[in-house]
Length: 369
Ligand SMILES: Cc1ncc(COP(=O)(O)O)c(C=O)c1O
Image 1 (cartoon, rainbow, N blue to C red):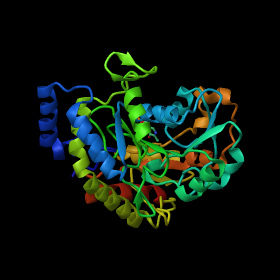
Image 2 (cartoon, rainbow, N blue to C red; image 1 turned 135 degrees about the vertical axis):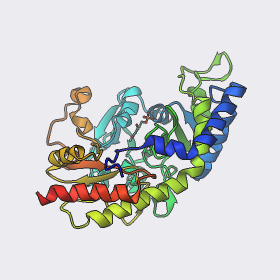
Image 3 (cartoon, protein in one colour; image 1 turned 90 degrees about the horizontal axis):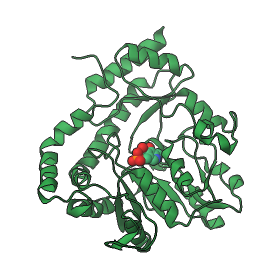
């Protein structure tokens, strides 16, 4: 056996559905429905059903979907949105794109998600929304955050980019807040053959305006009601995603298999392992372990042919692009420590038992030294 274990093996996933995808792409090319089109419309219906939502609007990326979500909520210049510093930067892009200011709140040490206990003290008269992230596929603790939203009359936006099909107290995430944004970037649990995203909501008026905003602010061709964007989902991506969605439940089960095997095999190592909170059923987008000697462990894994990655090495409040916000090191100690200690191990549906064992063996070997 090849003892190398890739961090991600997209070709393996593609191989398993290649014939279906080829046929779907050929159909799109034959009918030349390259922008939105019937396959995207069908995918929107199917993904809405998957999320137990009334509406799904396809976008060209998750970033665009989150941007439009904040526009729909009327967030704009001078406003503040409470969010997490421990996420991919696109969560904050949405806030910046509408001219608002990201206001960061520290994270919970066990789940890496926004800590509900710390939110209220960050609310000001300028706060217009709360936007946490279901990070690594693990739902954030929704109920206490919804209670804060209700008390302060603030909308909740779920950044669900990493959490397709994750469940909170038995219900699939995506409609707990007013709006949620999903990403179909190729490496996501549900990934396009290119870029893609979706806005999910139970609010028909939001969905209608989102459809207009993604298409140049227009519902009737060449008549533009407001300044919009070219944020349309490509027809080919709608077709690919429609095919892949049918396999998603199975793939999520396979991710769970991998996570549970890691739990068993790594239980007696000094690593802090990711655990599902009592309320959560994770979609296991990532399997993120923690250790103070993270950098050495990373080098050891790589030297032994095991792929790994960092999600994320630098929290957003310390990024150069947000220097003007005035945060400094030490402001969010839990997130900063997580960023120093986190290491993502390979997790994808096609990871074999032999590969899982190889990863565990190389990790254990590190701690023997
Ligand atoms: C948490 C989070 N939010 C937003 C995004 C943005 O999605 P996209 O890359 O599709 O624009 C991503 C993914 O890249 C993400 O991981």
